[in-house]
Length: 87
Length: 87
View 1 (spheres, each protein chain N blue to C red):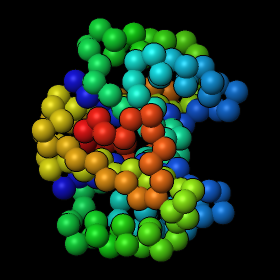
View 2 (cartoon, rainbow over the protein chains, first blue to last red):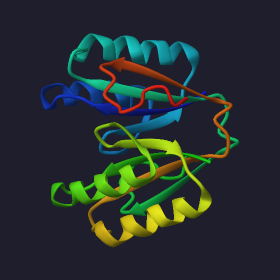
View 3 (cartoon, rainbow over the protein chains, first blue to last red):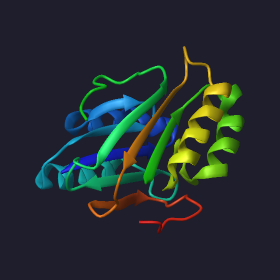
C-alpha cells in the first residue's frame, strides 16, 4: 500500500518522529512523509510513533491508498523532498 | 476530485495561505487541508496560492485523487481538524 503521513508534533518530539518516519517512508517536505509500505511495516511504524508522541497534543494523520493508480501529485514552489518522483 | 494539500511556507505568509486554503478545502491539522474540489476551483486555488507564496522558499504539495474508493484515513494522537470524517 501507499501511505502519506502528515505529522503535527511538538518540537521536542520532532527529531524522534523524523527518525522513525525515515526508517519506513520518504521525507517529502516539512510535516510530510510518503511511500510504499507493507502491512507489517505500517503496524511497526504506528507502534514506534505511538511510543514517542504525546497523544494529548500531537496529531499524525495517515492517508492510506490501496493503489496509486488514481493518484497524481503536483507541486507549487520549491520541491524539497528526498525523492520528488515516487508517483 | 479529492485533494490533500500540504503546505510548508514561511510564517509571514502562513495566514494568507490558510485563508486561501479555507476558501476551497477543509483544514485538517497544521500543514494540511483536504477536500472534494472541482477542476475549476482547483485551478483557482493554485492560482491564488501562486500569488502569495515565495516560490524560492515555500513548498506546497497536492495529492490529487480521482476517486476516494481506495483511500482510508487513520489518526494517531489528537484529531485537530474541522471535519475528521470526510473520508
